[in-house]
Amino acid sequence: MKIGMLGTGLVGMNLATKLVQTGHEVKIGARTKGKKEAVDWVNKNGPKASEGTFADAAAFGDIIFNCTNGQHSLDALKLAGENNMNGKVLVDVANPLDFSTGELRLTVCNTDSLGEQIQRAFPNARVVKSLNTMGSDVQVNPSLLPGDHDVFLCGNDQKAKDQVTEILRSFGWKSIIDTGDIKSARGMEALLLFWISLMKKFPNEYFNYKIVRKTR
Ligand SMILES: NC(=O)c1ccc[n+]([C@@H]2O[C@H](COP(=O)([O-])OP(=O)(O)OC[C@H]3O[C@@H](n4cnc5c(N)ncnc54)[C@H](OP(=O)(O)O)[C@@H]3O)[C@@H](O)[C@H]2O)c1
Image (cartoon, rainbow, N blue to C red; front, side, top):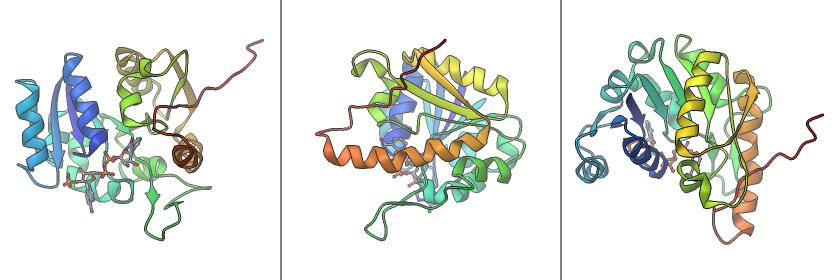
């Protein structure tokens, strides 16, 4: 499959590498074509890897990942171009975190979320929020942690969620919890407030959420 990866930070690069390793063609996108980190990534990852602008990556992908800075994701997606995303699955991995005041806060919360803002701004994209609730290495390699632990996903389009589920399984995820429509992004993004507190307590980011329940 062809994947458009929006974002050249750690998350975009790690996911892009994993997707190439699992057989996909990936174009990674930044605000400008030829960004050094993107070119270096292409040189390391062989013929299935390419780079360009956000718009180039979005046009290329059958599925698009949003791994841009959450405060600026709506701007990044505008640069990617609505026409390049219409009808496509848009996996939103971003978190609307703001550290600018010295105190962690979300730029949107309670009655709205970044996932919902993206779905409203691009109504013909099929937004699926996922992978935002764990560190980047765990996203692409869940077996780094012992036992079962959870990845969540939500969105309005069941077929889009099914496609994302297949990709998650190919990364090794076994416990994939569908939390409902895109409004569930409110809770998934709010989990980051707690995740960051844990991150400050623990020696590294190798931990994750696990929901324990009685099934009957
Ligand atoms: N770090 C983690 O372990 C982790 C885990 C789960 C989710 N997340 C979420 O994943 C996303 C990516 O995180 P990251 O740490 O890899 O990278 P990041 O530094 O948060 O974001 C990098 C990307 O954001 C784009 N960007 C920054 N400012 C922009 C602006 N004003 N307009 C348009 N685009 C802009 C950059 O574009 P250029 O390439 O052009 O510079 C770059 O591609 C974030 O939303 C983060 O909250 C992170």
